[in-house]
Length: 432
Image 1 (cartoon, one colour):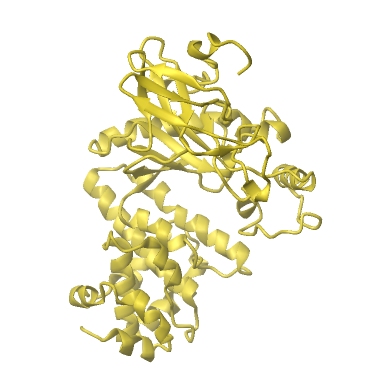
Image 2: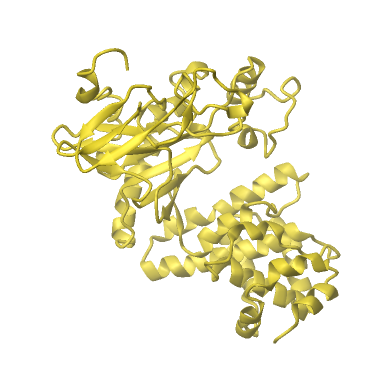
């Protein structure tokens, strides 16, 4: 089964410049390559295609790509190497998957070979979920992510089915390793540690939550990241955060997602840390599809609070967090107050993040940010609102959110905004 990588690439007319990217783990892959490569066996990939909710009209290119692999021992070796690096080599840098070459002399191109690899993730997810007793409905819902991204590829590649080159294989690594789950409207990934620009504290007596900005963040006078899209505020300021045995001192971040330039001190005897970069969290992802009603979001987040302790009890988490264009704190200024996105934001604790000033365009305009705002389609209310915002010379901010696990039962009561500002800030007086 062993084959030299250079020989493999040469026989497939893949330039030698890719060899350094693929050398890592090559010998291990060749030593473990099975006689029958299941990911190109029709009985396997067609079953997984159906399971993932893909239509049968993707079968012809899938069959052609699989036949090409089965007919070429060298291509089979390369595909197995890719599958092993993607799903089994946890230390392999996921960003390198964006550079993986595929032969382009076949009836189908790299987009279909990538789809075969992604359907292998479906097979692996099904097996891993069964071992944990995960309900079949959750597994099926999770695997329909394949159909979502194949549909995206069709929209952006003149109706051609497949999987994009950039970022998509790395995303499906999570599926193939049993790390992502769709629970109702939303998806969740277990992360080892948190991410964000804030840490949150809960008052031991009142239960109030107060977030403080991490140190050394440059905020503009409105309390958002300074320098987004090259716009710098002459009144910008830099946050500090100092923690001692006596307590913590820093700058508050309101649940609406804005930092406040007023230094506060939280005594350790009264406040405990509830969310910080070193606590485990669930990363929430929002799949395409619309229909993000408040009730569906509530059901999903509360389901996550029950799902992981039941099926993955070792995966403890303190909060659900997400960074996305959907949490732009300025939405209330240009979206209707009863829109799903604005209503969802009110239930969460937002925080500011950096960005390029065009957050959301990629999703709203099928993978494009370099749109002409004068000619771009305005066929939905969201597209119109975003384009009008850009015409006004304003940024489209990104944003983040966290929601503490112990507050999940209170979803719908706006637990963070309803108690803002907490008593420790009210005592200081002034506007918050």
